[in-house]
Length: 269
Image (tube, rainbow, N blue to C red; front, side, top):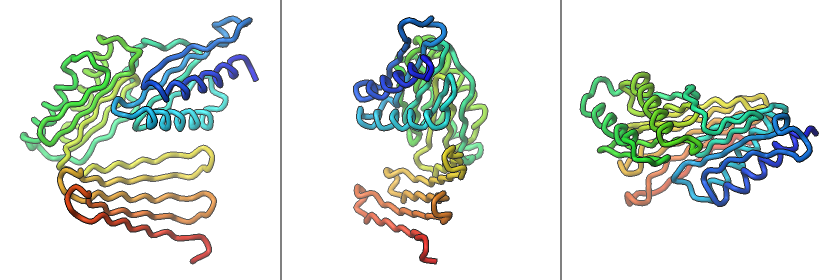
């Protein structure tokens, strides 16, 4: 094991340990007796601002495990999950602007419904109003917006990043009922809670070579509608499909909660 690889392992340990007590931290790990420019490992993590400490640690632990599996021989790597972000490299990147688009998702069009589009614009405007917070939530009517910057940025850099993300989101998801725009150091999202949100993710698993596809159709609990999650997972060890369907009516609406699960077991035909 090289000095740098040893430092990366120490970095990952420090990141996971720190995630149990805070939602952001950054580290620079080096070995004594070596030129720092040759072996120093830089890394940081950040969790979504509304996560509990326990949920933050679970997400970061999962992220680090995936980085180890996906980038075993790399000098750097980045992983972005829905609830957390982890990055490491052999060059210092703290405080660097990064406005490269990493993920964009646009929901179905609402057409040129001026009422809905004005609500979306108003919710997003509250997120880029310059309140000095790295994690921001803004609501306007039925529209819920969320934005966050990585905390190694200055306030000014955060504002610039969110303004850039806002502009791209409204340009590329102009009439969408919901949309996400993730740049290298910030993201901005919105969701009209009166609409369906469908997310499709295709994840190429490095250890199985198989695709995993997750589709979610969500109607928010406050609308009194059903939430339906369908997950089709191609299992590498069985070659069979597993299908799970959940129809949930929230307890707060006074309705029943019903869970149906159809599983095709190996050997049952």
